[in-house]
Structure formats: structure tokens, C-alpha cells
Amino acid sequence: MNTEVIKIEENNIDSDAGSALERAGSIIRDGGLVAFPTETVYGLGGDALNPESSKKIYAAKGRPSDNPLIVHVADIESVADIVKEIPEAARKLADAFWPGPLTMIMNKSDKVPYETTGGLDTVAIRMPNNKIALELIRQSGGYIAAPSANTSGRPSPTVARYCVEDLSGKIEMIIDGGQVGIGLESTIVDLTSGTPMILRPGYITKEMLSGVLGAVEIDRTIIDGNSKERPKAPGMKYRHYAPKGELTIVEGSQEDVVAYINDRARAARADGKRVGVIGTDATKSLYVADVVKSVGNRENEATIAHELFKVLREFDDENMDVMFSESFDDSGIGQAIMNRLLKAAGHNVVRI
Ligand code: TXA
Ligand code: MG
Image (tube, rainbow, N blue to C red; front, side, top):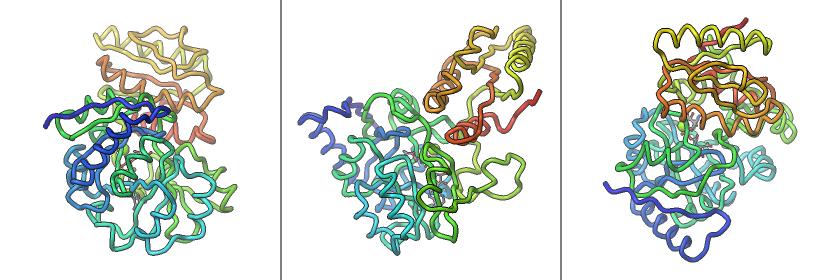
């Protein structure tokens, strides 16, 4: 299949871009697939109400079909048709955070095929905060099922180039809308049983959700690497975001971490391995390795979130055999950052 790549600027959806989005919409309505930007990461979109489209999404990503997809909508009114009822909590959260990086799980209506929900009676729904995405959803009939637009197991794409790398030849179109704003996938909150529960941490933090709803729980299995329980979001059990090389997270005082990483890096390089280090602006110059990258300033969590997947992808491109990363504070957005980093490292952490 020939994959068409088109460039659209989010802040300039002129008539050319408008007609390109109309065409993209008709591809999706006809059962085809289009990768598109959202504010979190790029999504791989198909018609959420068409079981054949969902099957194609799983095939293009190489994703296990028990891992349900998120349905993207362009307004809260659209939610009514695809759920049994809209819980009061969902209305409050939509008021506060939509469009935005928050996915809510509700009980699905018969309109949503089991192919889209991985066989579950619940459906994950989100309204993305990106003008290209919102217009594409409207042009596509209102409901786009979209996982992140990467091959299963690779870091989620933050630029269109990585969608091209993973999906070229497998889907009809890729919309290049530039670099995404956030760089980590949405927060997922389950509203189907008792106290709302975070199934995947993201940019919308537990504190932000509690501010609107009061009590909010978090699925412990997603922070505890040794938990024997299954995570409640089926996708969280997979080792996502896995870089090609071996990644170790090192935790401790700055001085100890730098000394430890430099020792291990020296040994690995003596063995002929290519070594990469993920540090911060303050420490970048202190490391000795083949490639050292900074994810920004420790005080600015949003930047770290934005850089993390990008750096992991770049290390893949640069064929690192061994990588070390500093550890980050796990409060606020830090919880999402550490969740993704720990998964990338297969929970391989050294505490010194
Ligand atoms: O930011 C995002 O959410 C991005 C963009 C494209 O919107 N999408 C995304 O989708 O990250 P994906 O497929 O990579 O991750 C979806 C996650 C998986 O962990 C899946 O198991 C969970 O959502 N999920 C979906 N439906 C669910 C349901 N009904 N119950 C529990 N978990 C669900
Ligand atoms: Mg994903």
C-alpha cells in the first residue's frame, strides 16, 4: 500500500488543509486508516464503530487484540450514543479537562463493537485538544478509534517521522502536524466501579482529578513492578515503550549516580558496547559515554515528559546497546514519567 504523507499546520487549517482533512475523513469512513497528531502523541485512527477498521488497526500495529482502543470524540454530546449512560463524574471531568489529555472509561452501548473494546463491556473515550484531530474526527463521522501510532512495543511517536518509520506501507495516510505538545499518552480514569480509579498516569494528575471529584484511587499494579496482580487497563501489562538496547535506571544522590553510571559506562564501552545516558541539563556534561542526552531541567516536569519518548527513540536510531537513565521525582506528572521510564527499563532499577 502506498502511504500518503500530508503536512498540516494546526494553527492554519486553511482551505487546502480543510480539503485534505475531508479526504482523510473519507478514508476513515470507508474503513481505511489515517495516523494523525493529538496533543499527547500521534494516533493511528480508524472508524471506531466499524469492526473491520479496528481489526486493521491491530494488524498494522502488530498489537494483541485483547488490548482495547481509545475512542476519540469531538464533543461531549457524541458520548451519549456510545455509552449506557454518562456518569455525573464524567460530565464534571469533561467540563474541567476536555478537550485534553484525559481518557474516561464508561459502560459501552451496543453501538461500539467488541473488536474496538478488546471484548470488554466498557469503552475508553477521550476528546483530544488538537484542532487537526478534532476536525478529522468530525469529518470521519464522529468516532475515531486510535491507539498510539507506533508498532506495538516501541515508544509512542511524538513526531510524524516515527509514524512513517513504523507504519509506512501499512496505512492509507499520515498527517504530519509537527511536534506534539505533551509527549506522553493521556491519563486513563475508570468511572465504571465505585471510586474513580487511575489506570494509567498522565499529564492530568491524581491531584487534578481529586480537585474535581474528591476521592480518586490509583491502580497500584502500575507503580509496583513486583505486583503479581494484573493491571486493570489490559495494555498496561505489556512491556511498552521498550527501547532496543538494555536500559537501567539509577537512583541516588546526584554525585553517586554520576559516578556509578560512569563506571558502568566505562566497563560496557571496554566491552565494545555503545553506551547512551539520559541525564538532565545540570548533569549532562558530567557523563562520559558514546551519547549523552538531556531531558531538560529537573524543575520542569513538562519538558521531561515531552523529551522522554523522543530520547528513547533517538537512542534506538543511534543503535545504543546499553543505556542508563537518572531517576525522577514521582509526584505530579512525575508519576507518569516514572511509569513510562520504569516500563521502558523493564523495572530494572539500581538504588545506590
Ligand atoms: O494519549 C492517548 O491516549 C493516545 C492518543 C493517540 O490519544 N492513545 C493511546 O492509546 O495511548 P493506546 O492504545 O496506546 O493506549 C490505550 C490504553 C491501553 O493501555 C488500553 O489497555 C487502555 O487504554 N484501555 C482502552 N480501553 C479500555 C477499557 N475499556 N478498559 C480498560 N483499559 C482500557
Ligand atoms: Mg500505545
